[in-house]
Amino acid sequence: MTKPDTTQQTPPYVVVIPSRYDSTRLPGKALANIGGRPLIEWVWRCAELSGAQRVIVATDDDRIATACSGFGASVCMTRRDHHSGTDRLAEVAQHEAWADQTVVVNLQGDEPDTAPENLDAVAQCLVDHPDAAMATLSVPLTDEREFQDPNCVKVVTDKNGYALYFSRAAIPSSREPMLPNPPAIASRHIGLYAYRAGFLARYAQLSAAPLESIESLEQLRVLWHGERIAVATAPQRPGPGVDTPDDLERVRRDFAERSHDN
Image (tube, rainbow, N blue to C red):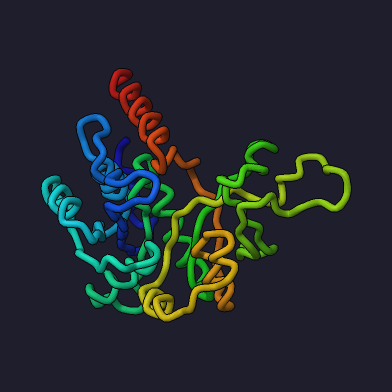
């Protein structure tokens, strides 16, 4: 993967990678070895290839901080009691004293195969929608099985590309017998977000929403409180993330195959 030419194309933005050790399904995954490097290093390398002006790993764990310092990443130590990655970003924005209009991209710490172009795209989407509190990306749904899969988060938007709802359920649901290509109205959501630093400060003060708890989707807190989320189509389909031991083994195999091919 090479760094794309982003001269005069990408708005100024920073990337923050929230990373914690105590993952529920795979503790310590940030330090899991993939091709001789820890998972978090691969995520950081993706961000370094983007047009971001700065990349920071936000963690509450000394082991992760030490590993990141070892491969040259900037680190911001954060509290342990954050409920979401967005809350962790809000602490970083406050610590760095970023101006309210600073564009901050949230790259999850378990996405080692993120296309740098997607980071640039979500930042651009936010800049292009000054009335949106957040921006995110989606890709077309490919088949009915994906549409029905609760692990695939769906998003539906209005005609101007602002999110109406995110759900693990198959939305929209047709009252009539299944129409041709029913997933066409919805898209698969990619968990990549851009915010302005001023909104991150406000987000930290927003109460959790019932919908957020039911769906286990933190972006629903934003919609619940009446804020807008702009959605753009990702330039590249996302690679696999690492949530479980099976995911980790699959990613290890993928990276090993690429290394062998090169």
